Image (cartoon, rainbow, N blue to C red):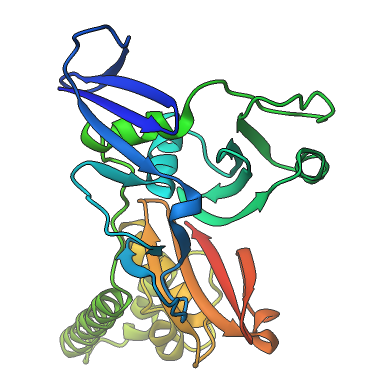
Length: 316
């Protein structure tokens, strides 16, 4: 399959292979499927939780975003610029990065982290854009035809970025991440804790029943506790065991991270998404300004009306 991504007058043709793709030159008579990228001026992108209505615009809820357009989108032959951008960055293994590209008479600067668009701005003046980039402390990926030699540490990549991402629409969709339901994980956590409590109770009952007549039962319990928790001094075995039913073994990594994240959330926090990639759990939520200082492991925050949107990261 040949797919041609087109953004303004720029284009990239990709050829689908078994487990990858390759860039193909645009030769006369070549047959391909074209995907036209809807530019930022025609597709306003906002967070999915945004509460806003724009008269005369159609609204599409897609992944973590709300897309506002004045015309219907033919998703079979068209793509939206934000998804083309995220596909391209994922294919090139770029993340936690600023991206700059043009939209005819304007410049678009985006910040992408964890393969999500955190925010973007539009600049109409070249000097204002360069001044802004000069204070950026992250890597910068550019796809514009202006001189930015004044940047201290630019990270420059040449190419038709959005056209490339658009062609990936029918070649590689692996950029999409599975979003795990917070309610589902909370239920799983509750069931797991109940199971562990049941196992612990059975163990204690059986141990006590078998050794009820044994005078050294206390010493055996101490020995068992020290074997399970070698670095914990014994004060009160019963209370210490009850306090240790939260899974601490490496085989319960996800549950342990969930417990950490859940215990740090304020009671009235709004949880939007929870992502887990096998080693790291990221939780996106909304809290009040007063509650922000009590949160741990915050890697991103921004104002949202009267509250603060935050992303916390928990690792094993």
